[in-house]
Length: 446
Image 1 (cartoon, rainbow, N blue to C red):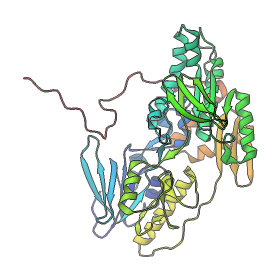
Image 2: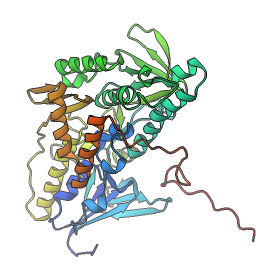
Image 3: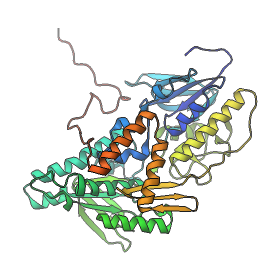
Image 4: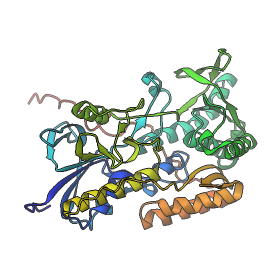
């Protein structure tokens, strides 16, 4: 990107909804934009569970950032992982794949790095109970879900077979509910006639949560309908339950009376809680900003860090007025920040505060069943499913992804076909994380 003297420099950390919408809002602004992302693609996180259960491929819920921003001539995309900032020198510190250090100067900084899975102080659970925040997570879950049926098919011990046909999900929010419903659909519809030694429909799906009911944030009416739909589907709901231990063969759960019960399960999936990533912690330390219990950064009404009017925090990392970490908040926050920066760069600064317009919430339970809340309007069952369908088609990024999703849904919903069931049995690549230093090359003995 050509360096144009006098133009303000904007650095955006993260290419999720908040980062992408900020960049889009700056398309014609007199600024130079550098968007830094560790994965170089935009991910539609609300449909990750469909990737993990074989309905959609990862290509249908992602889009390369360079493709999305190819017409934005003032935007440069950089593949790197941000490690911290120097707010006094206005510099962002990052590292390229392989570990090489980089620095980027800025006049405005947009921190839109998103959040990661929280295990509430028990990070050791992650080895046995993957979360679902990235494409990598979804592919790991796909391998574990479909692999569990394969392991059950070849097992000769009845107890081992039962364990592999037991799936435990921790967290009864939208992600947990959607995964639970989809696993039961996989077992009762997609796989029902494919095996010779097991009956996939015998698979048990256990849903654990410390709250009173699934989808409690949707209100008692929709929550009750969601619970009824899950029960009809065959999902066993264990509310008022706290998971205290997870290992390779199951988990320990404490109920509201303090009784601890062991559940044998071949697959445990974690959908409870989120936490700020390490870069957020580094930014809080550098700026002295306050944060909530989950590490989300507290911001003012203009989404800036107090004392640092050039640093904006939209999206999931933003802590303001109890707003939830959902896509709609991130989109609107990104548009607001982009507009705010554009006005300032054009010499017309705005003092208009950010106001969120609640577009509602939606959760898919099974084919023909979903719950949707839009203001005072509540939809459930088949009508809710249709509303969910159109909402997600509208929010998917890119025409190609929309058409691909519609075609995949058509086959999945009308013929119970899930074409995206391929998973790897080996780890791909030479390092687990490309941002760590690569292993040394073997010595050449000549």
